[in-house]
Length: 309
Image (cartoon, rainbow, N blue to C red; front, side, top):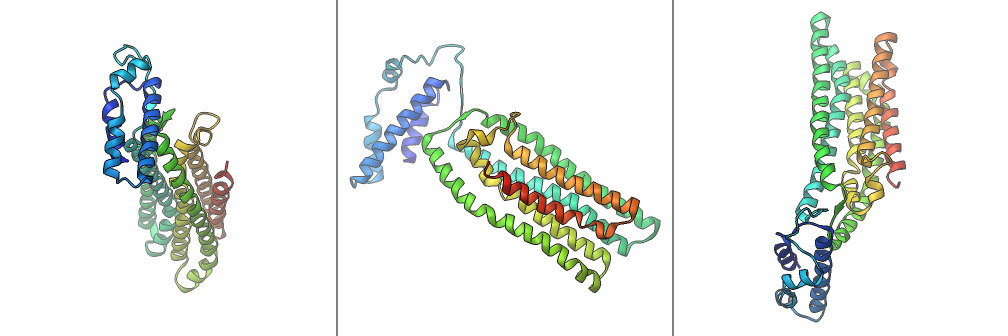
């Protein structure tokens, strides 16, 4: 099968990617793969089956002439046809993108937890300075991650816009999507469980150690939970781009993945802002931290309710 695909790619590599040429390529590939499968079912080995199918392929010039396609015609409008390599590159990028966004969110959440713990070990004016440097330093790193990968995302989103792919590749991606979908519920459920655990163990850690360490443990567990919410759909979101146009494009032309990421970001940043306001103005550092498990659970609810849209 790979031999046939490589042969077809070689035959079409110098032709413009117009709608007519791409459609012809896809039709020829489907026909050759069907013929290949028929020969395999008859007991012929793959090497011989590939050879026979390729030998039956007509002369390219005759095919172009028969379909009235002129490859040398100027100013032909090309379409966005993606090769298997480009598709896999995009899928891998989406996974990396979601992981990096999750890391950025974890840094934002842990900035609060680490600052809380440092106050137990470094007091006075010097302690406040160190705590502030650590807090805003972690936030700055997170913002840099968001900016860099947000800008890269625009390139990859443009790469797959109105993309055309092989029908056989689409079938493969549909199978991979269903497999990923089956595994998606587990990290979401574990994330919600971690949010509940973080609240339950806080008093215990505070009793055994210190309030600051308890805060650090609490925020770290919450950050892991939120990261699980964010990355749980990394594979399914990537596959949906190619198998379901409606799920790829939102009402304003943005990808659903961007919409979900924006929603999670707004939820967690809002929770952080509320926590800081409660802490600095009302000194409700405790029990103000309850806002974070609630925000984490809300992220999980959003993910569950939107994943089947």
